Length: 360
Image 1: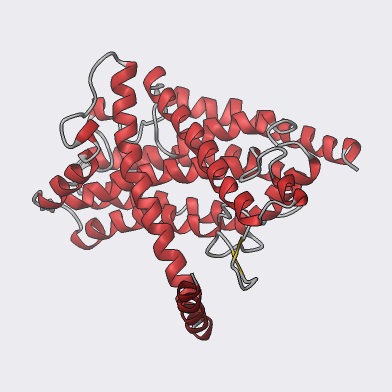
Image 2: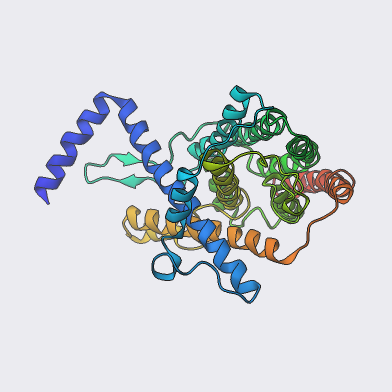
């Protein structure tokens, strides 16, 4: 044990001399975990859809189909990369990159648990950068993915992908506003844009924000499903109509869009607990530190709590896909502008009244 502690002290002193190394290590660990979760949420969805539809999901590649995501990745990697003759080659190649990176950048501001305490008393936070304007950064970065979809449709040189990308743009406009208003209600309750402060405010109030912001939570869920282009709001892809924005893509470029979609699912599923469900908080468990429990035990339980809440939210998103049929395009826009927007505004006034008169 002493040898390990001495080794860690040497590594720690070296990292402190070069602070950028700490951030690179954190980014590497975070991206590795996110890629693993994204890979296996695809397997979980396919198995669950098979269960919901009384059929078998993927179960041949590896025990219980656990190596299926690896096989799918290799299949996309080995497929021919086709660039249509009528396309804009440069933008056609860049579009998947624009769609791929924004959801992964957003993970940097999440705080997954209370800090980990080392034997020498130094603490390490479960976040890459817990910035003051974390929520604002998330809303800004999540809006950038639409540029990749628009570029993909326009640069393909085909009318069908163009229709899909135009649908994507109008759908984003219809649902981004209610989504933002639902998040603002949480910011109003917490009095801060920092995600760790929002979790701390829920601990201080002794209740989670989905209780006073229950309407906002419902608006958040519906709007986030539309933001992710998931059923029943998957009009930009529209597989049965053959107008998806990625119709002309193949190989790894198509896989970039595929991975970006599921990274968005993970991203939205991890944002919801932080905003509405107390993040890493477990009722009564955080008080263990007051009774002599080691802080790292509370920290580990916090990571497990955050993971469990995010998993439940993601499974609910999958259940919605298996349950509801796709809306018509006019219905989709009507729900966004004429239903969710007034409800989100009303929720904002209700939360402001609660904050002003009941939580002085």
